[in-house]
Image (cartoon, rainbow, N blue to C red; front, side):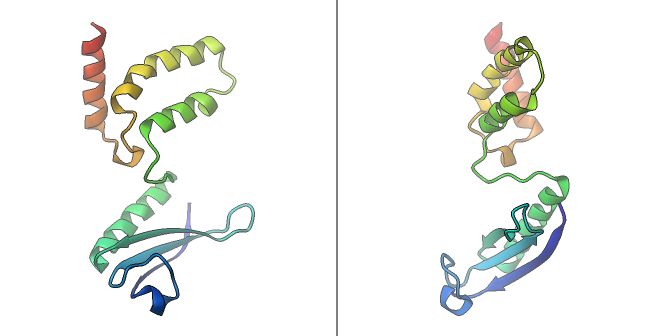
Amino acid sequence: MKTVSTSITQGSAATLGLTGICPGRWRGVVSLKPGPDGQRRRKKVSGKNKSEVRAKLAELHDELNDGVVTNAAYTVAQAINDWLADGLAGRAPKTVSTQREALEPLIGIIGAVPLRELTAATVRSALGRSCRNSV
């Protein structure tokens, strides 16, 4: 996904004409191409200082370039359930139920982890615990 522009600003809500910004906070905005409905699309980050916002913007750009766009509250359980509902379209019902049964223990262990924070180490640990519990 290509970005159109990026900006970083600082100030109070009154001087910027914005609401929900604390005085002295920095905000970064990435403007994206308009959506299919023609609506303007933007991703926003904020931080205590300019370097923190720059780091968050770099992370956001990496995410957008990888084609992964999630919100901070999107969890592993939601991603798994979405994949089971939509990612297995056209598969036999038995295949879907087998995948659901195989993933159920992992949902119990790491389902509450935000997808953005998921690491290979977390998955390895969860798989190890799942194997120990099944024996």
